[in-house]
Length: 85
Image (cartoon, rainbow, N blue to C red; front, side, top):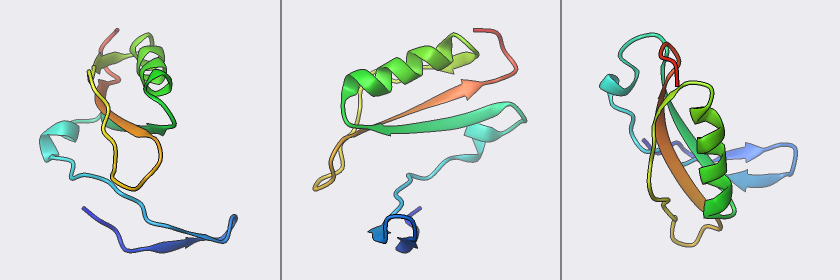
Protein backbone atom coordinates (compact mmCIF):
# COMPACT_ATOMS: atom_id res chain seq x y z
CA UNK A 1 0.00 0.00 0.00
CA UNK A 2 1.45 3.34 -0.96
CA UNK A 3 0.45 6.28 1.13
CA UNK A 4 0.29 9.75 -0.22
CA UNK A 5 3.09 12.17 0.49
CA UNK A 6 2.97 14.01 3.81
CA UNK A 7 5.09 16.67 5.40
CA UNK A 8 7.62 16.01 8.13
CA UNK A 9 7.18 19.11 10.28
CA UNK A 10 10.35 18.55 12.32
CA UNK A 11 12.81 18.60 9.46
CA UNK A 12 10.53 20.47 7.04
CA UNK A 13 11.35 17.90 4.38
CA UNK A 14 8.91 15.84 2.37
CA UNK A 15 8.51 12.23 3.47
CA UNK A 16 6.97 9.47 1.38
CA UNK A 17 6.34 6.45 3.57
CA UNK A 18 6.66 3.15 1.68
CA UNK A 19 5.21 -0.07 2.94
CA UNK A 20 4.45 -3.26 1.11
CA UNK A 21 1.09 -4.88 1.72
CA UNK A 22 0.74 -6.98 4.87
CA UNK A 23 -1.48 -10.04 4.48
CA UNK A 24 -4.12 -10.80 7.12
CA UNK A 25 -2.35 -14.09 7.91
CA UNK A 26 0.73 -12.16 9.08
CA UNK A 27 -1.25 -10.62 11.94
CA UNK A 28 -4.15 -13.09 12.26
CA UNK A 29 -4.04 -13.21 16.06
CA UNK A 30 -2.79 -11.05 18.93
CA UNK A 31 0.96 -11.25 19.40
CA UNK A 32 1.86 -11.56 15.71
CA UNK A 33 3.66 -8.61 14.16
CA UNK A 34 5.45 -7.58 11.00
CA UNK A 35 8.67 -5.62 11.55
CA UNK A 36 10.29 -3.60 8.79
CA UNK A 37 13.64 -2.02 9.60
CA UNK A 38 15.33 0.66 7.50
CA UNK A 39 19.02 1.42 8.03
CA UNK A 40 22.11 2.51 6.17
CA UNK A 41 23.66 -0.96 5.82
CA UNK A 42 22.97 -4.69 5.98
CA UNK A 43 24.93 -5.23 9.18
CA UNK A 44 22.67 -2.84 11.10
CA UNK A 45 19.35 -4.38 10.05
CA UNK A 46 20.61 -7.92 10.69
CA UNK A 47 21.87 -6.85 14.14
CA UNK A 48 18.38 -5.55 14.99
CA UNK A 49 16.80 -8.78 13.76
CA UNK A 50 19.25 -10.75 15.92
CA UNK A 51 18.48 -8.58 18.94
CA UNK A 52 14.73 -9.18 18.60
CA UNK A 53 15.24 -12.92 18.06
CA UNK A 54 16.61 -13.10 21.61
CA UNK A 55 13.35 -11.66 22.97
CA UNK A 56 10.66 -13.47 20.95
CA UNK A 57 10.13 -16.00 18.17
CA UNK A 58 11.25 -14.59 14.82
CA UNK A 59 10.79 -15.83 11.26
CA UNK A 60 14.11 -14.42 10.05
CA UNK A 61 14.76 -12.81 6.69
CA UNK A 62 17.97 -13.66 4.90
CA UNK A 63 18.35 -10.70 2.54
CA UNK A 64 17.70 -6.99 2.44
CA UNK A 65 15.97 -4.92 -0.20
CA UNK A 66 16.91 -1.59 -1.70
CA UNK A 67 14.56 0.98 -3.14
CA UNK A 68 15.88 2.52 -6.38
CA UNK A 69 16.98 6.09 -5.81
CA UNK A 70 16.68 5.81 -2.02
CA UNK A 71 19.63 5.48 0.37
CA UNK A 72 19.96 2.52 2.72
CA UNK A 73 18.39 -0.91 2.95
CA UNK A 74 15.23 -2.48 4.37
CA UNK A 75 14.61 -5.80 6.06
CA UNK A 76 11.15 -7.20 6.78
CA UNK A 77 10.59 -10.11 9.14
CA UNK A 78 7.82 -11.55 11.26
CA UNK A 79 7.65 -11.99 15.03
CA UNK A 80 5.43 -13.92 17.40
CA UNK A 81 5.39 -12.34 20.83
CA UNK A 82 3.49 -15.28 22.36
CA UNK A 83 6.26 -17.84 21.73
CA UNK A 84 9.62 -18.05 23.42
CA UNK A 85 12.71 -17.51 21.25
